[in-house]
Length: 406
Image 1 (tube, helix red, strand yellow):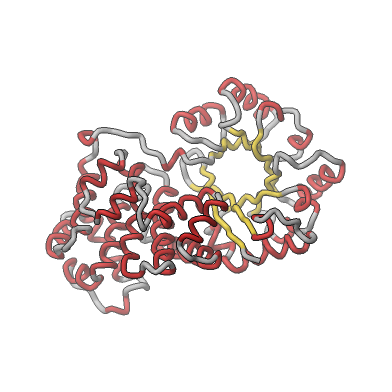
Image 2: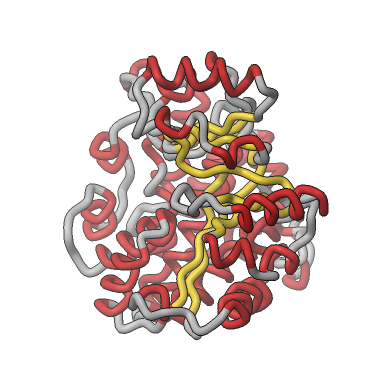
């Protein structure tokens, strides 16, 4: 069966990634066909995580998987390790003695249980007695309801996860309520500030990005930008001594490293190094997300026939979260960077040749499989193309992390 798998981060109070929720969709589910038996479902899930790689998808972190009634009663949970899997019970699972006994059994084996999309109307739900983590839906509850729910649930020693947290204000509210974990797109949205408030070190990185993306990049000028920053110089030399580049020989100067990389690799890697300088005040997941998007977009471009422009699609993916990194509106950001017009246009949401790729990586991230299917067909791609591109993007980002290049 064709399988699509995506992940959404779950952060702790320090905005470090605690776990990923894994979202999956196979062709039978997509078309509304009945799944022929529990084993077929188990095969879909296990095959997807074997083919893509569970370790690649989760980067050795815990992972949440949604379980329907049928999946809970099957042997699917037993395919995964007890210390890593969080069994997420969907809100529409009917209450029955069979399910309650199954929850008790899974808890006895050592699995962590979570309840999804909990609202005020569910505060006395029978399953809540058996679960460890309660996911409070911030879109379907009022502030007063959340306060009452949190007080009651914390009183019975439940761990709270605030989900669908879409703004910094809701994130701060969730912390005040006593939530331990957080899920939503709040970390990818900017707290807009004026250009005058942008820190000096951030402006230096913007200038480097500007130099890298000029129509005819000046290697000497770029080298001088890097040499002016000890941290960037160190990271560039570390990069050139990594497994990806060590075979190219010894590097004696910044300029030599810049020339050795070549224009396309230079655009990608120096963008990564520059973005790293914007990281200290942002969650690690923002950097991870920007790199996954970048490589995902690049690989989609290659498979969709945009090989010669794949480096620009890499920039599109990476810069798609630049608002959050620079705390400025996208229109102001693209005005400061000498990017190609098509790249600027798609970053501003305009429809052009790059738009289907731009939309595809966004919709894949959200688990909006119907829209993924639409843009995939527009690009002439198969589900395998999308899955392989995403797999390569996540694996590449993990390798950077493992080599401490992030």
